[in-house]
Image 1: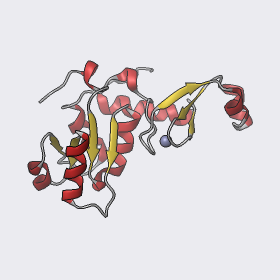
Image 2 (image 1 turned 45 degrees about the vertical axis):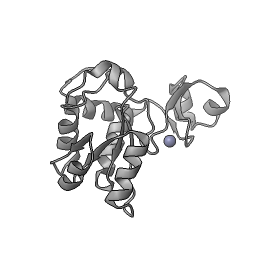
Image 3 (image 1 turned 30 degrees about the horizontal axis):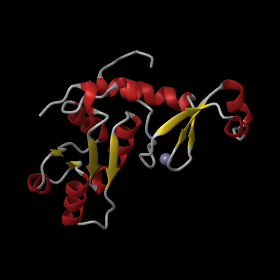
Image 4 (image 1 turned 180 degrees about the vertical axis):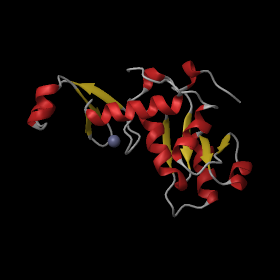
Amino acid sequence: MTFQADGWTNKVRFYADSMLGKFCRWLRLMGYDVQYATSDMNDNDIIEICQRENLVLITRDDELSHRYSPSVFIRNDDYHSQLREFISLYPPDRSRYFSRCPLCNGPLEKTSDSNIMESLPEGVKKLHDHVYVCRNCGKIYWEGSHYFSIMDRLNEITGHHGEKP
Ligand SMILES: [Zn+2]
């Protein structure tokens, strides 16, 4: 099953097994709604959550992928190849990049709120007139050098070389 980039990212939510932590953080940076299992959860717990919340399961466990549908079985070990594998099935929507917190999956909100801007380090305050705040955990993000290296990495993974956001 393959989806078009537009139209599905809003609706489809994912659940990944605990072996896919780094991969998940990258998916969230690309705007995918993805939660992941803790290592103390067994296969039955994972399947129950996916069924209850209507989630697409992403797993490195071939057997588990056969016990639940819809699921995506990830073959590769390194997160680069894992992401390539995944986006060949669920293409990213670039307009949704940086819309989710990589740490907790909460939605990011663009803000120029003066209280938040005042709380930033001087160097950041000078360079930015807005930041992004996670509505769930409160972590603040801005488009610093880290942002551009992430963007380069995402372009490398998705094959959009040299494009700016
Ligand atoms: Zn967060």
